[in-house]
Length: 146
Image 1 (cartoon, rainbow, N blue to C red):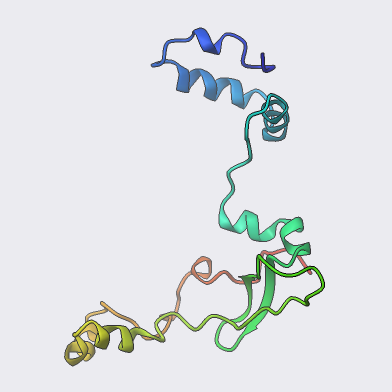
Image 2 (cartoon, rainbow, N blue to C red):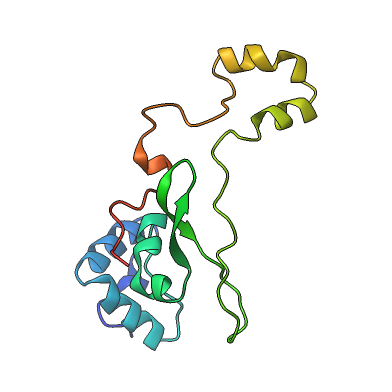
């Protein structure tokens, strides 16, 4: 039996989610991961993209990198996940600004003649509008110093 889960197998299915929530809240996530993996189960903490990008292990492995973007300044970006052990990490290129391909996409979809109107109506954009919240750009601010 896994420590902290005694008796959950006897709970009615309708009560199981609430019971597990209480049990899991009784110990830190790392403790549950250790208990569950020791029992042969797969377990990991669910994290959002910002937590993953700030993870020291991901940074050390080059999976989370800082780069200079021509329009956005210093940004946090995803590095290469696969590489040969003796091959230097090439961070490729900074992603293009949001909206830089808008015209081509609209034209390929057959709406090119209406591009100006779609732009005026705010349906498409050609670059980040002024005042776009920083969270939509993955800024380097708030990320660990490297």
